[in-house]
Amino acid sequence: MTSPISSLLVANRGEIAVRIFRTARDLGLATVAVHSDPDADALHVRAADAAVRLPGAAPADTYLRGDLVIKTALAAGADAVHPGYGFLSENADFARQVQDSGLTWIGPPPEAIEAMASKTRAKELMRAAGVPLLDPVDPATATPADLPLLLKAAAGGGGRGMRVVRDLDSLKEALHAASAEAVSAFGDGEVFAEPYVERGRHVEVQILADAHGTVWALGTRDCSLQRRHQKVIEEAPAPGLPDTLRESLHTAAVAAARAVSYRGAGTVEFLVTADGRPYFLEMNTRLQVEHPVTEAVFGLDLVALQLRVAEGAALPLTPPQPTGHAVEARLYAEDPAQDWRPQTGVLHTLDIPGQVRVDTGFTGGDTVGIHYDPMLAKVVAHAPTRAEAVRALAHALAGARIHGLTTNRELLVGSLRHPEFGAAQLDTGFYGRHLAALTETTPDAGTAALAAALAEAAPAPDAPLAARLGGWRNVRSQPQTRRYTSAGTEYEVQYHPVDHPGVRVLSAERHLVTLEVDGIRRMFHVKRNSNNTEVYVDSALGAHTLTPVPRFPDPQDRTEPGSLLAPMPGTVVRVADGLAPGSHVTAGQPLLWLEAMKMEHRILAPASGTLTALHAVTGQQVEFGALLAVVQEEPQP
Image 1 (spheres, rainbow, N blue to C red):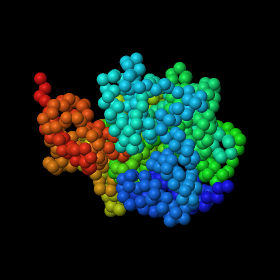
Image 2 (image 1 turned 180 degrees about the vertical axis):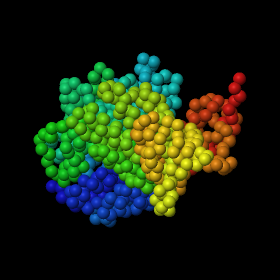
Image 3 (image 1 turned 135 degrees about the vertical axis):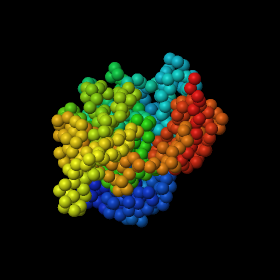
Image 4 (image 1 turned 120 degrees about the horizontal axis):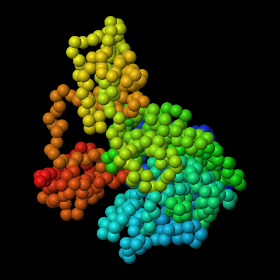
């Protein structure tokens, strides 16, 4: 009989650590956090009863050091370790070491983790258990009839080490790139190939099992909206599945769990073809990022159940009945219009209104660093119907105030309000078809710039009484001029405080401007960051980040035409073969690969021409804005 847990260490960070601490606190458990040096003041550290430093910054030196985590747990008096997701959560050796140290492991048996760790070995087990599978393809003998192919890393997940191959000429290069990324991410370069299913759906089943032979299949989730093979929007239950297909997925998931004597929470993932045939993809032997949608429809706390199962408790023979529909959106600090480029810096404001669940590892004023995944929050809406849940989630995100970093918020809102999504026409090719339209420039920022200028001209609350009474209403003989940039476009605002074509000023204060725009009353919330380098304007017309343009720009801010600057701090993991000063390059050609925030980013040639300088070398650490290379554009004929 396992001893009751009294103190829990979470071997993770960010929103998942905060979420686990919340349940632990409700259950009366003491909590212990671990943190790297960049995370010393992170929200998960502030949320725990005690915190212990893991010296260093990179994950390999901190959160992936199982020996340090176990030493910390013992020193802090914890009697159990919850791995969260990512990092060491699916590391069988770490699970064994936790148990060998006398600590309770909040997860499946190490043998189950090991059995599912390699996707190739897992598929062999599933075939023996009667779970439907796609037939593998040997890349060495692949023919045009086998295309398209999906290359996948045998170890790990999260989209790392995955490539879609549509022509045989690119297969060798794709294998090399997938293997190199797999080595970097998981320390294992094994890659396998299988048919790539066009317009397939990613459907998964949440399972929960105890040590007494009970296995629950907690419904389905659809996770088809993905970028770079990583999920963006998830929902439960998966809409539009016939009852027979739903039952077959539940049956296959339970069979997969029983095949490895599973215990605890896990997820069995399937690819469902357009004609409704399911195929096993993998089993994640941990809690999933998207677990809140299952919690919402079943009225359960999966973390609490994980803890009880780890203590030896038996589950009821059947789970509760699901009610309603839940949808989750992952809010990332990234720019979808720029190849999903992650963002770093200070998050000045994070305020998401409405009756939604927000799981986050950040509050306003926190810094998003370079070492970890750029997810800011998971936002979840639950309602009696799918349409109501989707509408509530879109409304909450549209009304959110997120200042300081570019995010995927507008993409999420556009996705949720897209006709295909509304009609539950879901498949993994959604962003391949609609990304360009969903990332078009936001509505004209001219009115937002006007609101920013009026707010800037408004008297401060502590100004003399005469100024506050007159303030912006004092009509000047000449208009005032302000210039801002937004999304690469410059806006010059010339205004009298009370006279603007098509706009009537109703009130203007430092943080709130009310305008009548084409006969419609609009409120604009205005906020400046602490050093006055950016102005944030939020209204029903959209959210805009404006950069005031100085009257006399610094000449040093200019760079040589064709300069390729590092879009973020990171590590140069690869330079294109044979690339050297004097090389001819073509527009869009990948020149360098930069790894940052758990993702690999391609640096592309901005134009066709000659590489006149190359400052980057493999393994080099570069700072944001570092000059990597220069391409001199060839003259146009």
